[in-house]
Image 1 (spheres, one colour):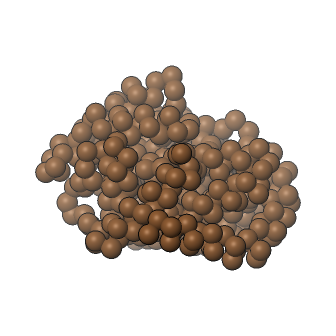
Image 2: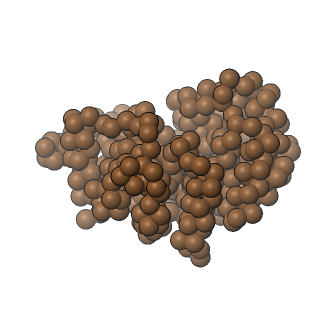
Length: 341
C-alpha cells in the first residue's frame, strides 16, 4: 500500500508540474519585490503550529507533560512561534483557568527558544478585552482575534469589536478571517478602518476559498499595513508564498515538512520548494475536513510518532472511520520516509 502511495504522488506531480510549475515560477519572480518587503524580520514568520490540547482517557484532565512534548517537538522541527487556543486546540472545550495554565506551561517551555501567540475567542467585547489583556500580561508575544460569530453580527459590529479589543493590545495583532468557521465576512474597508486605529504590527490570518487570489487582493489594497498568514493546514502553501504570505498557521503533527518547503522557497530554490510541497500535498489534502475530525487525526499522528499517549478529544468529537485511519497510517509512513529519514 505504501508503494501505491508513492505511485500516486509521483503521478500527481507529473500531471500538475507541466501545467503549473512554469506559471507559478513566473508569478514568484514577478512578486520578488513584494517578498523582499514581506520577508523582513517580523514576529510571525515561517511555520506557526497550532498546539493541540492532550487529554486523559476520560477527557477530564489536561496532560501537561504531553502538551510540553508537542511544543518541544514543534520547536525542534523549526517553529519560531507557536499558537495556542486555535480551533485545533479545542479552545471551545476549555475552561478559562485551563487556558491560563496551558499558557503558563507553554511560556515555560518556549522561554529563550520561541514565542507564544494566543487566540482571543470570547464573543463579548468586554470579555475579549479582559482575555487579551490577561494573556498579554502573562507574556503572550502576539494576539490573534477570532471575530464574534454567534447570531451573525454585522461587519460594523465586528469592526467595533476588533477595534475595542485592539485598544488594550500592545503586542502584534492578528485578525482571523475565516468566513466558513465564523460565518461572517469582512470587507477591505473594514480592515482599512481597523488599521487606521492600530499602529503596531498587523496580520490577517486568511482562510477563504480560493485563498491565492484573496491574498493578492488584500495585499494590493492593504499590503502597506498588513502581513498575510494562511490557515487551512497550509494546503495552498506554495501559492501563498508566491503571492507574498509570510507564514502559515497549521497543525503540529508534522512541522518539518513546512519548514523544508519554506526554507527552500526563501533560499530561491523554487523548484525544490515545489517538489517538497508536492511530496507533502497528499497528506495536506487528506486531513482537510471537519474541524473535529481534523483534530482527532492530528492527535492520531502525534500518537503514532510517540509524542501523545492517545488521540482523545473532549466530547463531542468525531472518531475517523476505519478506512480513514488506514489511509492516514499510510500517509504517516509516507511523510516520515520523505521528510524524516
